[in-house]
Amino acid sequence: MTARILFVDDDPGLSEVVELLLTGEGYAVVCASSVKAGLERLRRTRIDLVITDLRLPDGTGLDAIAAIRRLRPELPIIMITSFSSLESAIGALRAGAVDYIVKPFDNDEFLHSVARALNERRMTRENALLKRNLKSAYGARPLIGESPGMRKSLELIRKTAPADASVLIRGESGTGKELAAAAIHYASARAEGPFVTIHCGLLPRDAQESEIFGHDADGGTLFLDEVTELAPAVQMRLLDVLEQRTDERMAGADVRYIGATQRDIAAAVERGQFRRDLYYRLSVISIEMPPLRERGADRLLLARYFAEQCARKLGKRTPQFDAEFSAFLEKYAWPGNVRELANMIERAVILAEGDILNGRDLAEVAPALPMVRAAGPLPGGARPLAIEEYIRAVVERFQDSYTETELARMLGIGRKALWVRRRQWGLKRTQNSNA
Image (cartoon, rainbow, N blue to C red; front, top):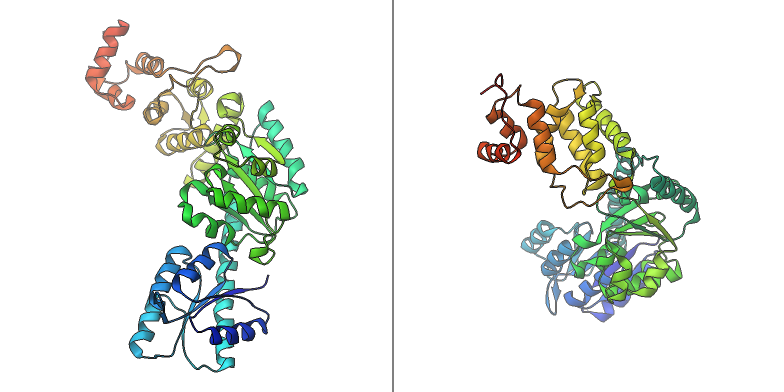
């Protein structure tokens, strides 16, 4: 892909000369005459290198470097000036410039500086992409599931991967939308290219365009998490890119786009918060990731997988689950879905003292779980285990083994709260219980 260079200088004659010099070497050039204009070009265009004058009409090159660093901290910057001084050179390099060139400059030296800066950027990008791909390929957990809903999602992923079409993945938080996107990427012809994730909701709206269309996903896949959070102008540009299949302002970058959301995207369309035409264009294929509460036996399947992985990292034997521990996993509604289950199992394995996870281990980790009474009904007439039922079950099961203080600490409540519950339930300690 052709390197694109932003040249910022208020001398139109010099700008023309530099543009001819750089284009003659095969580079694409964008010119600006002020700090403000340069930043605007940077927000709307893929840029690989910035060359800026030290003195500009609306600020200094140091101001430009600071603003560029805030917007695109990875970009190399070369400073040029007619007013050379040791102080300005040191200031530019400290601010983040990779080189400092005095005008009038020798063309060969200038081109050598440009080539060196671009080569260093290319190596940095390649190292970052290698680390990202290794993490995505080997660090992420696989998609696991045998439930009907999950089988349907996995089949759609299998069919979608080689098609190179845009995909929209929907599902609650923690259901595995990013894993599904990664699975599509690594089963596609783009597997050797980068898989880049951008969390749209975490980006300030004025930075969305430069982040999304200034990325390093050329030849690979760009995963836009919470795509409904995109600003209207960014939605418009994304629509243009999807319709053209390449981004002309990014020198023909070839990217597959996968969007995801936990929101009701159809409702967002009706409210005018998300473009209807972009919704249709993005959701050529739509995949629904089912919530964990609807995945039946997958809960135990996933729990055993997480326990095995955590035990391996800790150098422990993989623990088994007793009936009480398994029952809780099956009855709890898991509002945080697979992510919550993974965290809970990790805590249990870390804190476990034996090879079997049981009610005592559950009592150590369950207080960190959110309340379940609002989670709603489960399929087949089953219902979530209410937290009060869980507390009573733990008290009845372990009151002969623990003191009131120990029971309260295990449950994450005070002794007075435990005493109040005993009165409500009419549950008295047995004569041989510990005090």
